[in-house]
Image 1 (tube, rainbow, N blue to C red):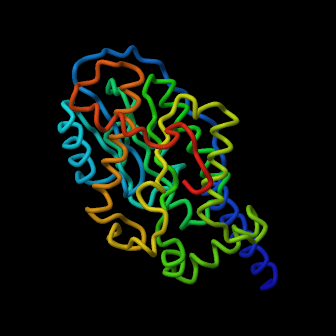
Image 2 (image 1 turned 180 degrees about the vertical axis):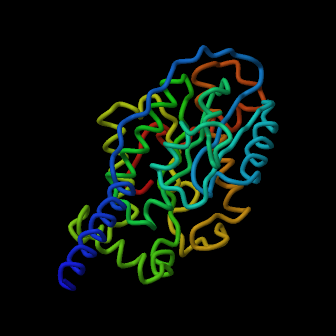
Length: 284
């Protein structure tokens, strides 16, 4: 009798663990979205979505102030969920308004651009490069369907080892088990994530309609530039200022390509011509 109860309990636990893994790591289908008519005006409307890197008001202010320096007024809305993986960030776009972390307003706010800041939580949670690339492609694709130009910041460099080393025993065990399942035991690297999303965006031609901002131009080595970081997984104010300025530079470049009548104050930054704005490299 005890053996039967033990087997039953083991079976229940395995089923629950399997369901947990399915919910956490599954590749869900694309949400249904409806096309909305855009109405242009003189204000540049920008959204920001992502994990904790998109939360708070610091980056909003930095970007808004940077645009003002070049004669452009902006309206910015941002939605960040701390520790959110790309799957949650995507689902949040379709969560009912009023629900915690819902970013559904992004799709219904007549936006011109939407900045996507994601990746650190995927890497720290051992979600796998294919998982990250898949949901990034859904986010980018659905923004484009709603006539919003995506501004995709590539996987940031951060204290990857320090962050994973700080996980508790159960989290480390979970990551090791999942790594065996999805990556054949490889712990992966940030470059794996960058290469995978690079290839998927090329294969789907999404990069042709996306402003890709290589984070390597903000920081290409976490250990050498820790002044840009508040801790192993988040930027300091100095780091946010550098990233915000780079994002604005890439958007202004795109505006200049689309419309040669960008305000004269923007010409200096536009003419800076950053490297390959629509291309990802393995080091980005």
